[in-house]
Image (cartoon, rainbow, N blue to C red; front, side, top):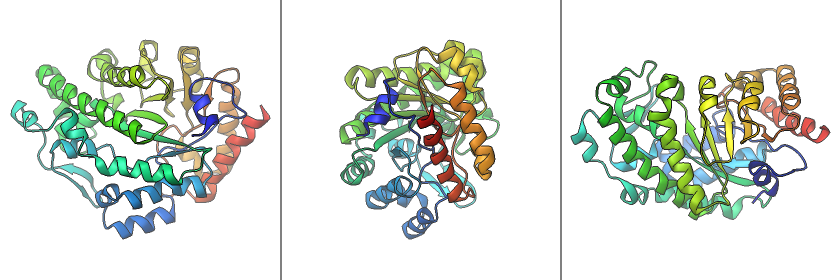
Length: 344
């Protein structure tokens, strides 16, 4: 595995600050779109280890990042728990049988029974490790229980989260049962990813900002910490990255046994450094839309490097790369990260 990337995760000295980009095999690469078209649809691509391996490796070969991120989707977890998932062109993911009550939850598989059904993910990891260069790390990932639960309860993406938040306030017992069941599956899912060969774990809470700060620990963070601590106890050599999006108000309350805190673009890097820089390696946090301008990219990279002087850091975007970003601009971002970190 990449010693540079892994050392950075553990806060050890590295020759330069490593860099990778969220949604690495994203729609910005023509090579990805070609493989996606061959697969027929997004879910087919997730289920095909050879094609998923190919698009995982594309950004490493084309863009020059220091780590590959496994190509998959967070929603394969509830899908294999027994929910009816489809990806609708122009609309995104949709569950045709959202959870409305305890009976809906009881019909879903849990624990190892569900995690063992994700064999195509583990087979993809094994293929990637056979082909990934020794100096590159492989990052596995999962959605946080709260983010997964929002899709499972709402049935699709939402801007209001009113159905799951109605459950949060009117039937919190049911929501905790959903979160607990998902957490048990995710623990074993990530463990099996580790056993298949991933080098780093990342837990995404994409919809963290939907919860008011005073409720965040109860309904999301504590479940993420439970997953991280389960993995760190059994696999202490595997770095764990936590990425809750949009919670600057929560930084004072961050706790748990993990290694890296992902800083999203809406959280000032200086604030994250002040609150968490002595406890965790920080990752992030360029605004993805800066990639439309090479000048704006360079300015942000230099600012982040200057801000993080003297602290542990991994360069990354502050959320996923957008589909119409020019490939040359993505390469420029990687080159600039390496340039300023070598210069420091």
